[in-house]
Length: 150
Image (cartoon, rainbow, N blue to C red; front, top):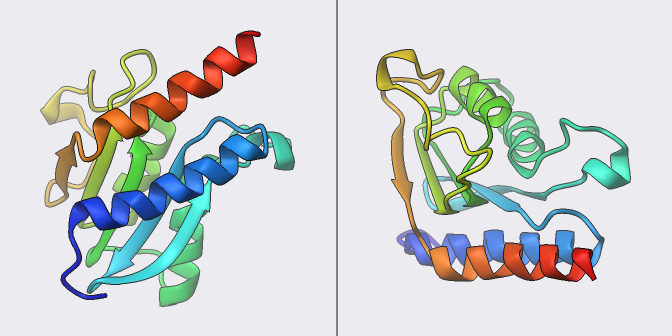
């Protein structure tokens, strides 16, 4: 498993997003790795838990911290299908996660599209990569909202 590509892990996050889709949740999935090992998988559960904070990223952060036995994730990478919102970006900053990889941008509610580098809650050492499997991530979201509107 070590040495897999960003696309490999994003496909795992897409599988989580597909689970959310099937459950009637906004289809966002997340995977957290450390040293090439998947330590957390999650998808949105806001409807199931009746909790506005139950975003995929928040669920994954909690699971990874539990797995590692500590609240900081500097050696971890988060793969998430859609650009994190401000709430999730804040939590990621507090976790000091080492790297964030996301698929599709969220031009309405995404954090990275709007932050000013000097005012970002993201840890200064966190590396950010965007656009990994962007089209597939975007298509899943668009499909969900088209279905919802019918």
